[in-house]
Image 1 (tube, rainbow, N blue to C red):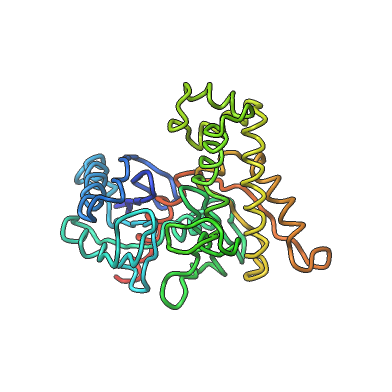
Image 2: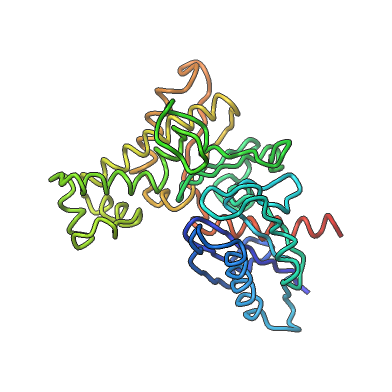
Length: 328
C-alpha cells in the first residue's frame, strides 16, 4: 500500500487542501474561503474538517493508496509542541490547541506546523531550493511568512516561532501592524500592502490610477493583488510602479535576512510572487544596494518559488508523512 498524506494550508483568505504522494505530487484538491477573523476558532476548525473530509472521500477505500496522516500549515505562531497556535495575526486563534481539537474529529494522525515552514520544506524537497544547504523562503501573501532549512532540517527556534520575518521592524514608528507593533516589514512588502497602496491612489482620485479603476468597474473595494499583477503584466505603468515599490521593500528585508542568516538562496513564494521579475528585479536591485559588506562577499540568489500557491500544502503533507514515520 502506498502512503498518501493530506496537506492543509490555512492562510488569511483561503483554506486549501490536497492529497499528496511521496514525490510531492498533488493528486486531489479542495478549497474553502477562510472564515473571517471575527469568527470563533470552532468555525475555522469546521472548515478544515470539511476540506479533510472532501479529500478523504476522493481516495477510494481499500485501494492501493491510503491517507495515513494530515499535515496542517497554519498562518500563525505555532508553539514548540507543534500542536498549539499561540497567536495568529490574521485569524482568531489565541493559544488554540489545534492538533488536539482536530484529532477528535479526524481519523488519522494530525501534525501541525507554521505554513511558511511547510512551504520552505516543500521548496527544499521538491522545488526551487533543491540541493541548497542554507535556504530561506519568504512568502508574500496577506502578510509575510518565512522559514529556513539548514542541511535538511527546518529551523523552528527554541519556542517554535522562528521565521516570523514579516514582523521585523523596518520603519520605526511606522504603520500599525495586526501583531500589535508598528513598522513591520509586512506592512510594506505584502499583498495587503500592494492593495492598500493601489486603493490609496484610487481614493485620492489620482489620474495615475484611472486604468486600474476601469479594471474594477469604478469600485476600489474590488481591487485585488492578482488584478494588479495582471494589469502590470499587461503593461499598466501604475501597476508596474506599485509592484516595483513592493519589490524595493522586499529587497530591504531580504538584505536584513542575509545579514542574519547568510543563506545561499532566497526563495520568494506566496501569491504576490506570481508577478515574477516585475517584483523580483526591483528586489534584487535594492538587495544589492542594502547588503552589508556589498562588493566583498558572495551574494545569495533570489529566485521565485516553483511550487506556487501549493507549496504550503505539499510541505505540510510531506512533513506529516515523515513525522508519522519517525514517531512510529
